[in-house]
Image (cartoon, rainbow, N blue to C red):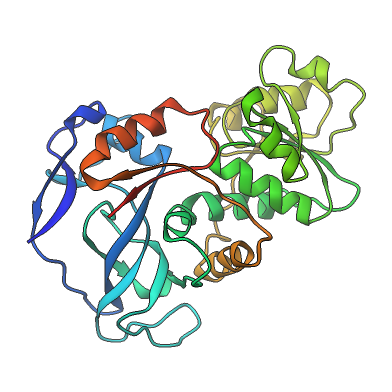
Length: 303
């Protein structure tokens, strides 16, 4: 048996507990990971609360982002580039129920973790990082563009803002004031979110808007004349129909792009801070931290 974070009913983080589940075994194309870190995402909290419905049977495991070491390999398990996976490989990606001692992953969804990248950082990279890649694939920017990133200190916003800076764009990001210095250090011009956002951007010729938290950036874009086909929503889904902005395109969420992201982290070209790390037995506190927002970067569970 192995230890895993579980819940028997939906609700607040208090319903979470650590219990025993059967040992995982890999199927065709799968591997078992000895988990080192599991990143938590708002999606996980929405599943826990039933804001996003699920018909999965109880007890349910939690989280999917993961960094770990391969402990068992199933038949035909190969990486996205076709090379075989070996026991002992340090990897990152996703595995269902990753807030646990072990978890099963599809090998082709994994990327190798460079030794210079901390496991806690790697464990929180996949969903946020690939969502950010998808944002830029949906509305590309480059030299001559000025993009407003809503929620630029959140995990997706941080990565999207840095990728836009790398592409040559001028990047303006909304964030709480205590995160402004972090944004400046990444080449992002910080602004406060809220009712004064539009007035603070008067005179700025925006060419794109990325919603990485809520719709205030999208509304500002509309007020400032940004064409709706140059705006993308990842959180304010009501704006998809109401404003006609783009839904985030998903075909860029590949293991190859994940490998590119973790390579950037290894080279120091991309930062994804760990806002807070919790032990497996503190998983309820970890979910509360996800719900509190305003912390820059990722919340992870280390095992």
